[in-house]
Image (cartoon, rainbow, N blue to C red; front, side, top):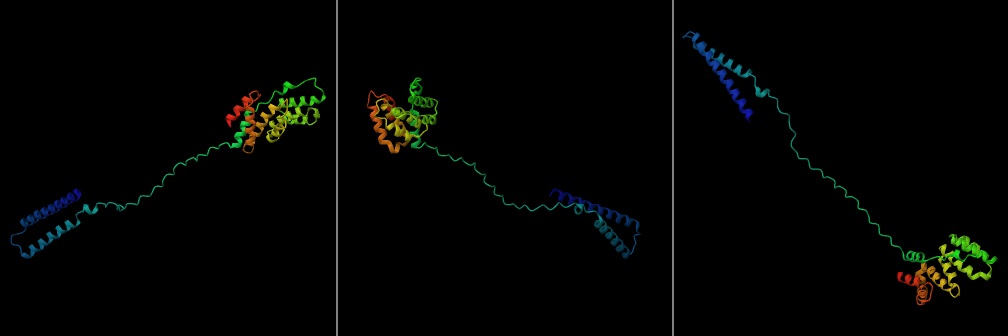
Length: 244
């Protein structure tokens, strides 16, 4: 707005200058012209002055016209705001369900943790007769944790040493985790004078992996052992009963 006002004032000043210049020239011409000039000559002079003033006004440079126009500004159209994609939430880790040990694994663990192998090497006799040499071989194999070698040695033991061989065979099966076979062998020895109490305890342990089906027999064995104050494995049986 201030620029337009300045240009208008400048233009009016130029027009005033032109008018003053024409007025001065007309006064000068009047002084130089004889007082008695015909009206026709005065009209011609007036016409020339007007033409000169019009030419001056027409050809005077127009600064407003020469002023470069500002470039066309783009219309302010508000572009619709693009919807920003919702940032993906960090993927939550799925909490894997805690794998609980099955009942079978629990009873198997109880059987293994409560099993304590006898000191097989303590029964080895270097001067044993021929039949007992095979038993000693089986004991050495079991002491060395080689149940397969023990079973191989027990195959040729004479019938006179069958009870000893079966007891060692039951431990060999237990070491091989053949618990059903071990339980069957120990079960045949529960009435033995020498191995009866031990066979009851080891049979109970061998039955534990099959607790769901052998529960009644297992509990019966435990009651029998825990109720016998003189039983060799009474304390072990009480501890196992508490764990069940």
